[in-house]
Length: 278
Image (cartoon, rainbow, N blue to C red; front, side, top):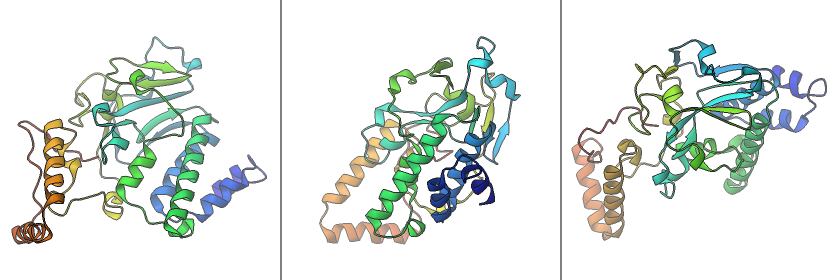
């Protein structure tokens, strides 16, 4: 709190609304997101989650063909699956930039836009739940929908199937392999590739368990399909069929699932990699 008051209070950037908002938030994951953005706006440098391993030196984040003085921020594609953009659950996460690693100069407008978008999102969620901001209850899907947007409208076509980095408004956007290799989707390649700069180990926190995603009582989570189209289609069909069943038949399937002692998994297509569940 001292850091926020020092840099955003009257003696700093004089954004008392940000200080008050940060003080009112109790959700650990939201405070962490806010602090990350606020530090990167007030100062500069490289941000990486604690479970991110460096594979290459930082100077390699910016290819030699670019003038570093003209680059304000470096980010990378994380999920590039626009074919799912209209999916009820996956849509908000299907076209996203990596948040576990990025680099920026100080006072980049996008950092404040992120803070303001979090503030608007959480304020609206508090009104929806009819509770103070500090008592908002979050789930995994809400968190992912919040994190997928920056409050700025962009055309994902500019970043779909990105084969080499490009600069957009001073922001150097790297292809998915740079910061998000080895996901088993989005044509993300692997960590042995020359273009892979970091490796994310996906175990920094237990926030997905503290803020659970939607899990069907019989067919579990669609994210287990890891963006495989056939698997997602089957999950959607199974869930819809279940919805249309009479209550007694639904209960029968729930009883069968409970008797199995474990959640039935969606049937993956041959060769499907179910490893990181984002």
